[in-house]
Amino acid sequence: MTQKQLAKEVGQNPGWICMLESGLRMPGAVTMPILAAALEVPEGMLSVMSGHSPVTDFKEDLTIEQLELAVREFVAKVGADI
Image 1 (cartoon, rainbow, N blue to C red):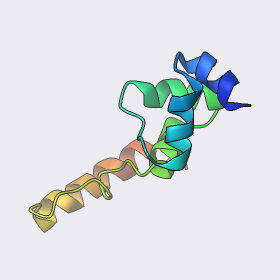
Image 2: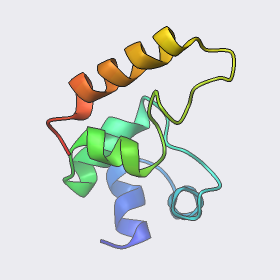
Image 3: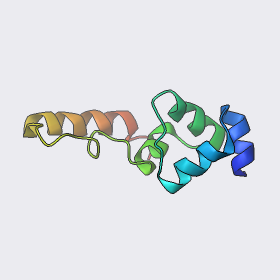
């Protein structure tokens, strides 16, 4: 699938797709499922591949308990998709 085809499929322009591919932009919560469907990949897999996860998006002021909970929630949500 070309950038142009994907952009049309998800209702964006090819420049936006290029920025996603180069890491200059990250897909948001609204566009993530649309992208996953267009690419025919599980949303959880796309989320992990794009760097979105409770593990990689945490703040330094999280407690270990909050981080452990985030990991458990992440595994529950996307573990079966990977």
